[in-house]
Image (cartoon, rainbow, N blue to C red; front, side):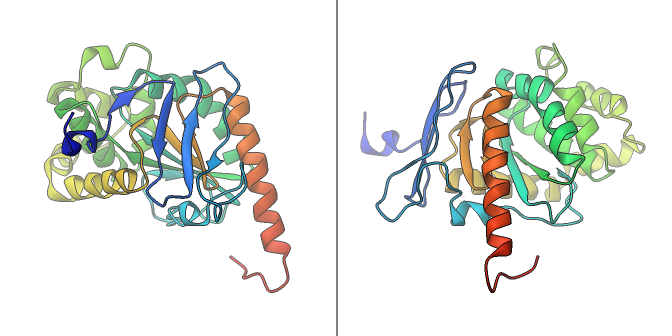
Length: 249
């Protein structure tokens, strides 16, 4: 294998993944779903202890009140960033089995904010679905589109133009003509590039991948892996907020 080809990201959708974070501080490591999840490990003596949030990764939380691809309070103590692909089976598993529980338990009480990043890795259909999701978001229907696109058996039907319009209809997008125009426009492409560049910059190479309070989690891990990460991140946020001289959010 040539040195140039060895640098190309390995694009996979699986429950087992290992990716290096470009900041050179934390590695992303996960076991297959159902196994005991591995914790982030330090790759530098200057890095944080295992389990601690990485300050550089924490800064990736956008916390924009008008973010169409986010749910939860902008000032929530914990932000979960999700990098996913609508053609990824494990992303669908997380969306159906785990995400609703996190919404119910943590988003609704103000503990957690979820920010989605479109990270298509399976070609043209993946990119089209990502742009369609963004377009649905412009009419405040991203979460509903997300649910429809990740429904059991949905990805097997493909993501051609007619199918994407049908998913938008299922999601309750009110203006389908605007939806199609937004989906094909440059702002959708630019938003997608922004999410992809962010993911590649920090070493994301598989979907789904997550940051929970700056903690990398790779793969569709069981619910308790996310609950543990959220609890730790919440405790850290509380400690930082109570530290002398801490800035108020």
